[in-house]
Image 1 (cartoon, rainbow, N blue to C red):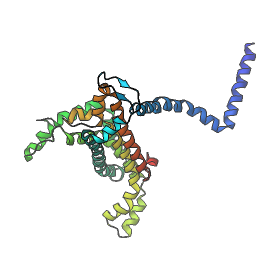
Image 2: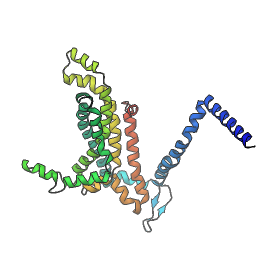
Image 3: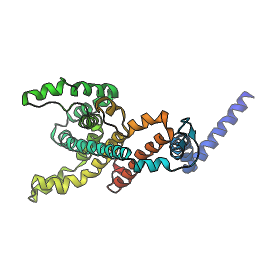
Length: 296
């Protein structure tokens, strides 16, 4: 009986394997079912709860959530000056971090991809990515020590009659730039590494100066990778709320308001939480036109 059962089991396995081999779409569906269910239930489900709860209100006397549809939270977001300022400030910080990362990352990636010796290039890339292996809080608190009064920034700038930026909005932008810079360097490095040297030689043979070669040859081919890196730097900066608490002084961003309202006014915190989601979706749609999504 045991031998017959084993033979029947092998025949069933072979038939199942043959069916999957003949039907690649069925095989693909079975492979994707589990991760898609995970995505739909946990990620999309949580976003749905977030959007729905943003239309609820809070009882002003008991602070209890009232599950009645209302647009008062979104009306307050666009009519209250404090909320408008925080939203615009958050988007401005994310854009400033993205631009700063791009300005720093381009020459750095150009050196690692085109100037450095081939045997050193992998080591340089590893060195650039090494900060990502360190703890987020360790890096932020290290910058707090650097930017604090009497810290490394003050010590370095004091001979020139200057002082460090201290804590505030510039410190927030500087720290976030350090945190997310590798996400901008890596796609630009990859694009520059793939750039055919024959195009640069042809541009030089045609009499183009380095600036013209950069504008007409290098930049158009690397721009999608810059946009791809900006997706990471922009979205990560827009959703960050810990850095600004540590080095931002009295500066407030969207994440800080969400954190402060989540216990006192959950529907308003949900409404604030929808703002980064909507902004990032609009940003992704804009970046899609540049071909950035295909470079991710």
